[in-house]
Length: 233
Image (tube, rainbow, N blue to C red; front, side):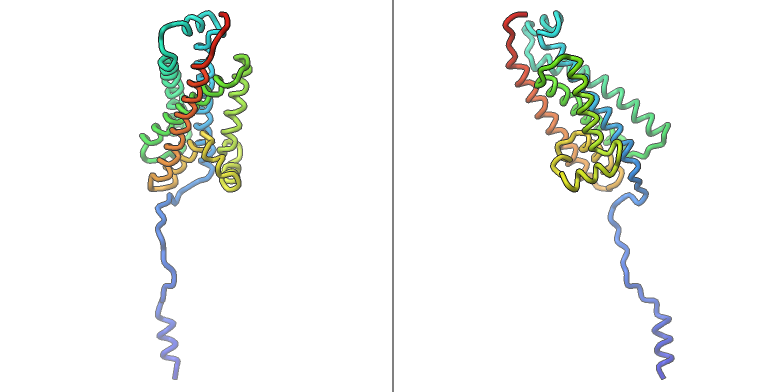
């Protein structure tokens, strides 16, 4: 007597699950982080320019630096002039790298290439600022400073996933504070957020923190350089 009722129930196709859209890119590839970390590393290598900047305005380094130091030009103005020149060269080099990755290797970036270029610009500023600050604080020879910049830049890039992607996630899980003070990691996050998420909240958060770090590093460098005094040149 229940056959008809059972057959009717079996023919009734009930759906007990719901598909949820999460605004994420369905074609994501974790391998892409390697290339984003590579761009971050080139930005961190802008610290070399920062080292050269400080070397050229510290009077005890060369006769040219001595003449620049005793000139009536304000110290901050000299830093800005040298900084902008270094930024121009560094940024052009990064643009060449991005063009090679995108059009030769076919690396996927965000649909908004302008946001990618903006993040690269801020990353270049951060790299040079890091070099200026560390070079102003470290009392060592020019060649030793270069070695220190190489070590620090590679270490920060490694923590951002340059060598092993999982390192980035391990740091974010167990030492999250380090992810927010690592310029290379922040820059990698900006690229990946553009690639993975449809909204820009995480992008602007990482970019804002990176910009804040750059301002802090420049201020620290200026205060250190301004207080330099020489007994004799």
